[in-house]
Image 1 (cartoon, rainbow, N blue to C red):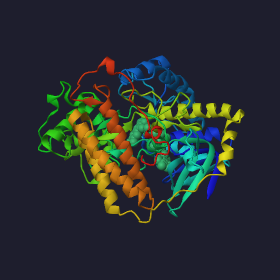
Image 2: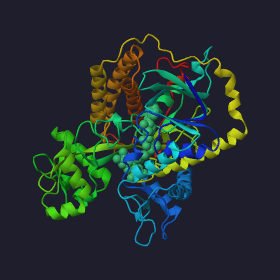
Image 3: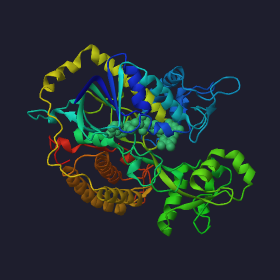
Image 4: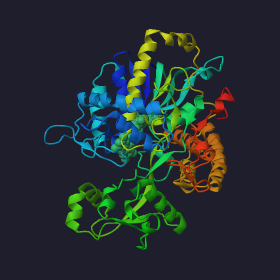
Length: 545
Ligand SMILES: Cc1cc2nc3c(=O)[nH]c(=O)nc-3n(C[C@H](O)[C@H](O)[C@H](O)COP(=O)(O)OP(=O)(O)OC[C@H]3O[C@@H](n4cnc5c(N)ncnc54)[C@H](O)[C@@H]3O)c2cc1C
């Protein structure tokens, strides 16, 4: 079956949904999303969304804070766009009915987070993302011109490579999509294709990201011939509950502010060896300290202990953490320590796009966490990511509106008669689950051990050799196997891991989130973006990729 629309949006987080709502007045929108519509990182965002709405605040101050966090690598123009256009974008969310928290006078309650010089974080209690997702989805499902295909996973982008006779050029026509319910692969074609597939935390074993965050957008775009940028910058949250499998539950920094002590599993404190501020040192120092203790001592987690404080006070100050840990994980934080690890949290790099979200293929856009607009540079300022999703979704809509007037996409129509259906190749076997699981474990453990918070040339080179081998095995396995979501995600995770490692090897300095013990300093001569050219440029039909 072939689905057609003016817009094909892949992903239903804040970026995809906001784009779809704004674009629907210009033509029919198809949203493809691989799980339940609400399943996304957006749905788990807690803190809020940053915008200069306070009386004493202004976009210039927000810009300064963003540039400082970005460690000298932000694109100033992208940041200027973000902070200026972000104010109106957040107001639009309010108009769309998102119930943000207000103070007694009815004004928006503005929170303050690390790295922000002002109170500017708009939030809905501590479940901001859930409220945004719920409000946007309510309007999407009621919209006559938007069709949501849930439990459909985009497999690959359709380019001239998929037409007969094969050609190599630079247009995107749509995507092949897998129905999880029937196992069939269909074509979804559109004038404009928007990747809004979110991040890639699942490349690591410990992550706050949901199961859908497997870097599919980056992998699909790279395979189709797009450049990717700055993938070595992966933000880790210092303290997440240690548990395998589940998205790691975040333990707020406020618990350390309240006196919680970090110790080894045998009770020995260690933060005094890393910073005079001990547990109150900045996020990246705490994350690095924990990581190095894990590696030196060969332990899987450290302890965060607040049990010395008064139990009633703990319950009163941290009801969400107390109740969640007690009810879901049987940990009573008033009596026992919490096992914690740092967890992969946010992908700062992504598909290289311009200020309107255009990627390297004609008619292809990327927005939200999967894109690299340049706003985050070497480190993301808290609460700027939801904002980036909104601002660049709106800019993509504006850009396409102009192109629709020119009827540019008409040029693609003659090709469509020659589209080849999905090529099953020799695939005959169902994936053996044990093989998928084994490869995934191997990739995640090498990413954790060699490409985590503390890196070195030796570790990265070792990781590169290992991932090349695993990736070629995964491709071989993929070619012989009937595609399922699991095998497709494995293929994407393996490719994204390889791209992160290659990016990390290219950076010969420590900057922002990238710390290499062989180059501990920031080096001005290394201050460039890391841009990876797709192999498709060398091999037009990309079979070997
Ligand atoms: C626990 C947590 C807390 C956070 N807190 C904050 C915060 O307070 N403030 C802030 O600004 N940011 C926060 N972030 C980051 C922020 O939530 C994300 O960066 C942002 O939501 C990304 O939005 P998105 O639309 O780009 O992607 P997502 O919201 O992740 O949506 C991606 C969508 O794409 C779909 N998808 C992926 N691959 C495919 C495919 N192949 N085919 C079809 N569909 C696909 C997914 O199913 C999903 O629907 C937090 C993140 C986490 C995990």
